[in-house]
Length: 218
Length: 146
Image (cartoon, rainbow over all chains, first blue to last red; front, side, top):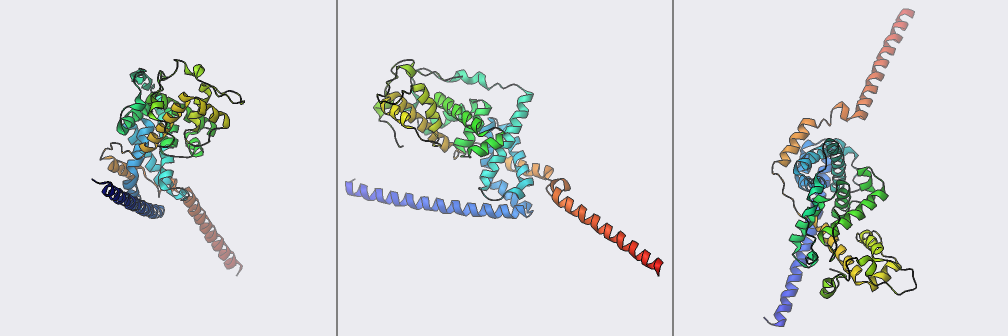
């Protein structure tokens, strides 16, 4: 292949990528409009519209619940409670933020309540798995593996974080909720939320991308 | 990826087992900042809520280890933000389970879920009853008087 034809192919590729990005943006904007309409209908008492909202949002809500609780059964309970609260309180959704953000806050709050209740009932056994992380200095994960592998390690490390650290890092760094919203839903101060976030990031960095010779904290 | 150090820099091994004290320090007139303090700052600045202060920048410019750590934080943050778009295995029955749960517990239109509406209806009913009683009494008095 000549340099000229490679150049043309690059231009074609970049045009195709641009077109794809535009199509994605249009589809996102359309989906936001659809969601807004469904929310309005739900507010006026249209149960079918709310059911459709559940249909389009439940996978994301469940993914968040699963990341917060680290357990499929708990995540299902949390999502059910969250949708019930959303259904009863949809009148209070003012539309300042996206519906998904509002729903994420409810999921975070339900998860917090659920985990607090569960903690009172049984002991946390997550810490016993911490030793499974490979801490050998000759293994430098930053230089190995691809994105998928990193994602798997990261998911695992998030699951092993203590609940109070896991919630803040998932809500802030994965779901991009503001510090104030996180603090409000978890019932802690903004300062405490930030301190927990920095600790969580540090632990994740140590577990997933350790510095040579660094031993991750349990 | 922005700010990514060259591969040779990433691969550079740690100078000592306890790098917090062994790492080179900036030679500027500013008070010295050790690697442990900068490490805390790296966790804080990784999300972009705040930038580095001049002291931290000076340390980063002179300390290879901390630049590698900064690069790893960036890598971590990018991986975290990608997680949101990563689908998780979902039970295909979940949607119907949520809808059944809503059917069972979703008493949105019941009095307990609509306290303001319930209060308004109760107040309206009380006012109507009072008006009827007052009118009936007034008529009876008028009848007796006539």
